[in-house]
Image (cartoon, rainbow, N blue to C red; front, side):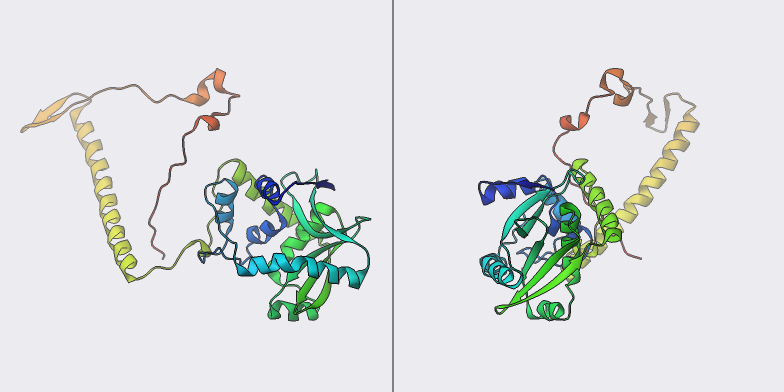
Length: 291
């Protein structure tokens, strides 16, 4: 593993945009329930938008600020319990070029790391029973993956009480985690939207429902008309025998225009990345009725 050093928090935040972090792992694995300040659950789709700079997600609130404030007292308590000095560190690994993990503490010999959580009571009770919440499991496994360590300490800190749960490296889980993270990062690099989840949809009121029903009906009618239009076009072209035709005041005129350019067939463009010449993303909406 290798360390990254940043002169400021802003520099660290900017660097995070070019990597997947350990907290992102829980989102991509579908177990995170972290919410933005407007109440939306942070899904892979929202994370994808954030990485591409298509949206800014405000997650700064009193709970996150409290967690940051309590991180240093919690780290001191952890150090008292295990001995040694632990410092926050950012780690990368050439085997996982898409990943950067921010450790709450790494000791000087670099053979022990800790993930600190200033937990709610329910999560702290889990720690007392030797368990960690499901939402944090991908995070600590990604830390084990990138650092190469055989285990990560999960430190639950609540009302000045600290509980250590040592999480063993799970190579089978890490194999699947690596696959999912690579698939997501490919979506970022190639501007492909990741699949949507139920949490990507916001429940609306009856006014919205009535508009949706009417729009669906209009679209269905339009679809039927388009299909009828296509059949009539084909029939009229056939009856016209490829000639301009007329009858009863109707004129049917045949015209020829230039075809579309097939850029893939141009030898000079075979090794040219045309994506940098594309315009701004085109936003479209589609209405679908659940069965």
